[in-house]
Amino acid sequence: MKFVDYVTITVRSGKGGAGAVAFRREKFEPRGGPAGGDGGHGGSVILEADPHLYTLLDLRYNRHHFAPNGLPGEGGNRKGKDGADIVLRVPPGTVATDTDTGEVLGELNAPGDRLVLVHGGRGGRGNAFFKSATNQAPRYAQPGEPGQERNVTLELKLLADVGLVGFPNAGKSTLISTLSAARPKIADYPFTTLEPALGVVYVGEYQSFVMADLPGIIEGAHEGKGLGDRFLKHIERNAVLLFVIPVTSEDPGAEYATLLDELRQYNPEMLYKPRIVALTKIDLLPPEERTALPEAVRDRFPAEVELFPVSAVAQIGLQPLKQRLWEHIQAERAHEAEASGR
Image (cartoon, rainbow, N blue to C red; front, side, top):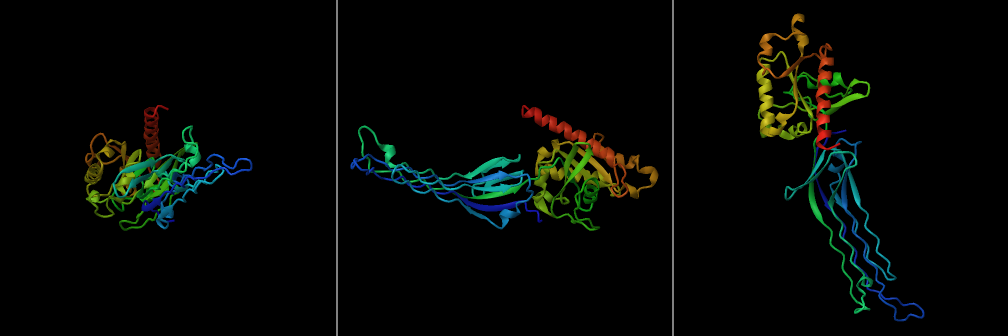
């Protein structure tokens, strides 16, 4: 299934039905009082987060969603039928924005979250509603309220615990395919990953986290170069950032600094996330350098940076990396729970 993370749709709510003007005409009551029922409410268009979805593909090919109108009221105090709501299911992590004004309408982060995009018009009151001691035979009723229409842009930001950050061909796809059951495309040329891939990484019994393999970043990505900033937005939702840098690079430290700068220029708040550096492809180093990094490599990184030499192909150093990622994730989850008061 194709990954779609950006789509614009047009939604319209239903009009409210008009109230009725009617009077009771029963046997023995030839001049009965007002009996006009209210009109039905128009249908609304609602977003709902569905955990079984991970793409906006369904909405790409069905971009117009118009809810039905409410029916008018009837005599005998009968209310008109309400228009049915339209519920559009989207993946958790979807952000809805008014396309024309840029206003953020809301986000759906947890399964079951709902967001009303356009409210249905209220039905008009029938003449029975307006009866009073001084006006016992009103001959007027309210029209129904009009519906609303707007263009809405839906943008999916992946909700993953760990996001892989790196240049093209750094070994991200190989790493996630080894740590999880994800099967992204792997080849020996850049930009083999053209869309995000999610994988579940198991640490122990009843312990797991979600890892996202994101398309490679290049210098100037925040300005739209390469695959541009289309996928940088997914990194915003990751709890922990795992920088993937080949140990065989000419200057691994410079690569790390460039990646960090791209994130900073896109959104400075991403620099506050916990981050770890996985130095991949250490199977290409001499055996004596695979567990203890050469000083020449270590000195190229700031002292506070956590470095993990790994090889997905040779299965070297993966368990310590998973364990450290899990510790960071647990700390982030505890912090979120404390912040939300749970």
